[in-house]
Length: 154
Image (cartoon, rainbow, N blue to C red; front, side):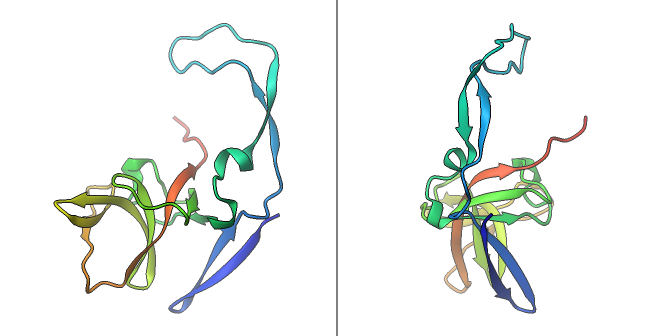
């Protein structure tokens, strides 16, 4: 279905999922929108089919998926167990979540420029922002373009 790549990280192995070879998955899409406010009359016909790989992926050869472990981004709706769609071809932009390789570990944080300095900012008050300095071994690995997770039972 998709190719995997195993990346050695210290004593662990991290498996990333490349979706360049993902076959098209077409699902029916209805012509009407779903109201998240007051209910609206339903349309009983299909408009078309949507190919999820084309919808989720802009650059297939540079797009990967990783699973989230931890809660440092929970206030940005990135939760433990979520699947991130990451595009390595995109340039990090202020305010967007990025996956970074920081001092031998992968982390997901919001990229922020503050007074000409780069920061990796968590979305959980229990964690502190990380100022990126020249002394760090830090590389932006890719930009998070989608977060996939199951709905939470209310």
